[in-house]
Length: 101
Image (cartoon, rainbow, N blue to C red):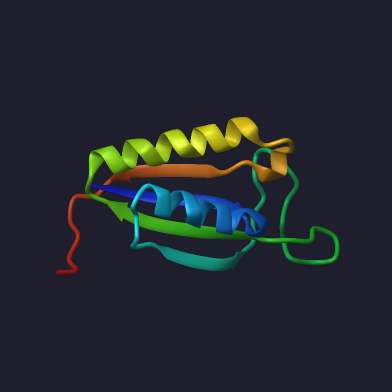
């Protein structure tokens, strides 16, 4: 099972949610108003100097095919964007234990 963090500008959040739904990933958590200074693109600190902010979308994926599909769709999305501020950052790692059932 994977834990996946997806970081994006708030303007891209709905597109990411659409991608998750296309991959039939229906359970996720969203942290709003995340201040960020990325390696690429402008900082988003939600202030007059660096306006805007990110969202962090987290999900846990058991199904490898859904995970692979998500990774490919995020890569495809990043290949289509026209500005570095639109790039999506995704990080994932294995989950050893998940207690929710």
